[in-house]
Length: 144
Image (cartoon, rainbow, N blue to C red; front, side, top):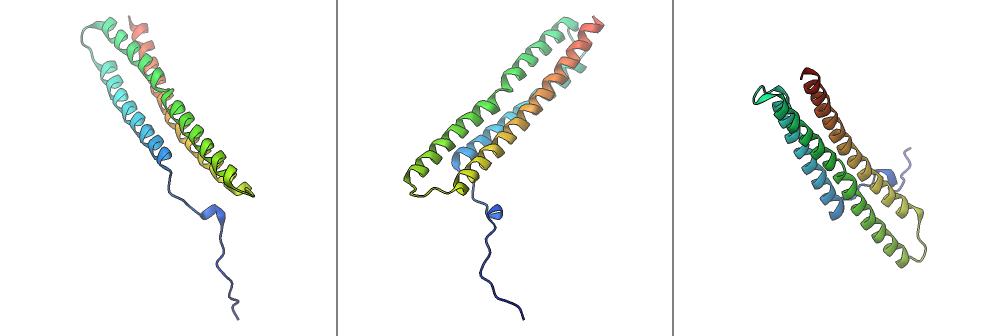
């Protein structure tokens, strides 16, 4: 005999659509990733080109490394804006609740930390790209 039970809800399996600000953050992260790929292609072309001497190649690689360093901070700034907006919404919702549950807070915090993870992943990719450019810059300076 099978016992009939009502629907069982596992709160870990409930997926809600991403809020608009999180979608914008993902769009920013995709944009930064596309820019990183473009800069990687540019770095490979610069490091393998034999035109116009070593000094020009060195200057282009230094400029590229500085540009990548500046782009490394964009994911974290975007995440900070989204996290601040999430916390603002959470506090506004908790003020309206008579008996706030911890589940609401934990779901919001989990979403914020997932977005932080994505931002850190993109920033780490930019860090690796910068390391690649600086490695080729070191090769250029050792051959001159």
